[in-house]
Image (cartoon, rainbow, N blue to C red; front, side, top):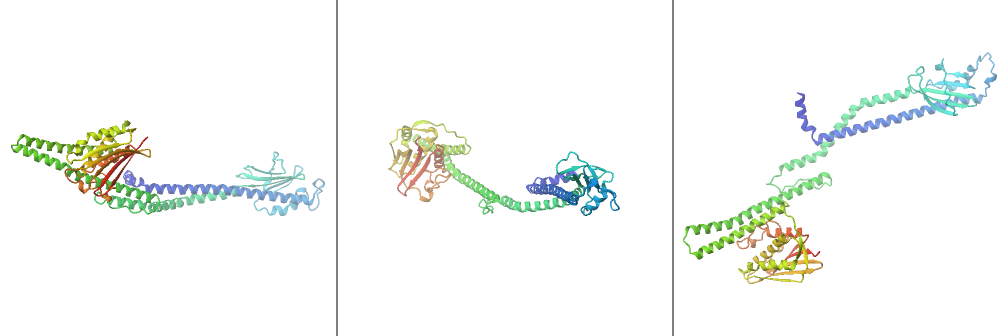
Length: 478
């Protein structure tokens, strides 16, 4: 039975709300105990100090009466009024003693001879030979006088010794009553602390509950929803802001995946459909050798197109999973770019687009030549694809302000101004790129940007409609 109850309570006990309430209650109870201890110690010291002052005042009062009267006890002679010195002294200090409502222990000595003792000292003698100062405070225990410790004052003056003492029983009783009161009210304080902690934690965590509820409502179908509460400049506001930023990133990732699914399916389907159709024609029809050669050439072009799409996808996958490591080495940059340009001269033959290269930099750069080659090839390939026929792609390598700028320029339709900030995003494609000759999945420029950033460089683009479009890779010289 008990184990079942504990199992049911376990989820609640593990909640932050319960833990917050518990910590609040313990903190409140600790403060109560600390306050009680401080009050206890303060009252103890205050009561003892008050008692000591009272004892001092009474001792001084008794001594003053005896000394002021200038009684010579050495010449004392019994008479009808006083049969012994004790009666005389008792009468003299009557006012000081009678005002003693605490029932103090009082002893007066003259030349080490006791001349007065209060009634509660019958049969007892107070002696403290180790106290030699004119005024001394002391504490002692004597179970025949009191069950508690006794505080006292000894005053030495004009051969008189006045001792006034008092048991601290009343102080103990006062402090004991205080402890009893604290013990009595402690459960109420604990209950109040627990209820207060529960109310505070419930109020504080209510916003968390709202965030959880809203988060549970957000799915892949409604990623446009946002969690309310960003306007608060506190921990909860920062949490909500962070979660909304995360939702936005998830939304962008989902959109990228959707764009990829559509674009990849379309781009992969087109060459595969062409391959299938041409192969079916070749199998079903009797063709001449030149016709077979044309089909094979077409199949080869579509295969190359498929390979390029897959290579870009594979490269992006390696980027996302941090599987690429740069292997930088010192390369003579102009010779390196020139060799790439020469290897791509045949790409522009179909459109009669020539590729030119000029350079005023003949130094070395630290680059990963394999990865950088992929970026440069993508830029040149794009420049040829989107160039007008019978034109020229201009490639220049210039040194400026300790920067090395590789520019690839072509003359074509250009890039709309509203697209200049988007063309480096994955899967983004201009409408003019959505055809078989120039099509892709919108990954080429994304690859270029990643490669340049890995080399701590910068990629820029300038374009005018139906005029020149220039892509520039900017790297540090050092």
